[in-house]
Structures are given as structure tokens and as C-alpha cells.
Image 1 (cartoon, rainbow, N blue to C red):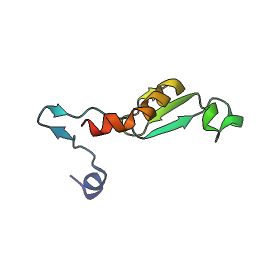
Image 2 (image 1 turned 60 degrees about the vertical axis):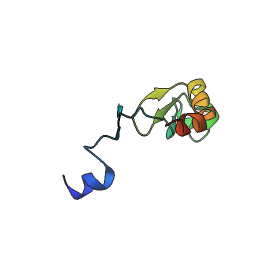
Image 3 (image 1 turned 90 degrees about the vertical axis):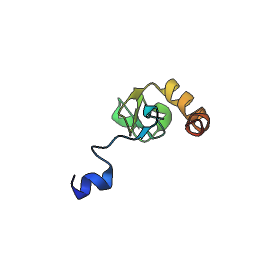
Image 4 (image 1 turned 180 degrees about the horizontal axis):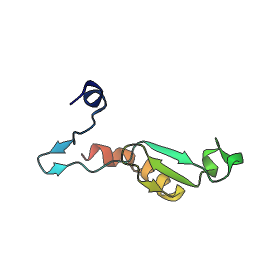
Length: 75
């Protein structure tokens, strides 16, 4: 494994005694359909998880953000 792979954690999975961990989706980045809306998070058309690349609707992203503390501490 190369230095950069080790530094960025590529090629290794985070495992527990029960197997791989489920992504907690704590790094959500907004995405826009209209260039004029870029930078206004309220006008985002979707959100993408920076860890697993899953895509969420604005409503789903709002729910994930509201329940983030409970999901992260449950691990």
C-alpha cells in the first residue's frame, strides 16, 4: 500500500466485530440544477454524502442532519 493510500485510508475498510460499518452520512454537500442558485443551500436540488457518494433529497438531508447526533453516538 502506498503512502498516499495509507494517508487517505484507501483500500481499507473500517470494520467492527460485526463487520463493516454503515456510513453515517455526516458529510453532506449540496448540489444545484440551476447555476443561478449555486451557493444558496435552501435552493439545493440534492445532497451528496462525501463519504459514500449516496444522493439525498433536501428533505432526506434535513432529516439526516436533525438525527446526526443520535446516529453517530449510537455507533
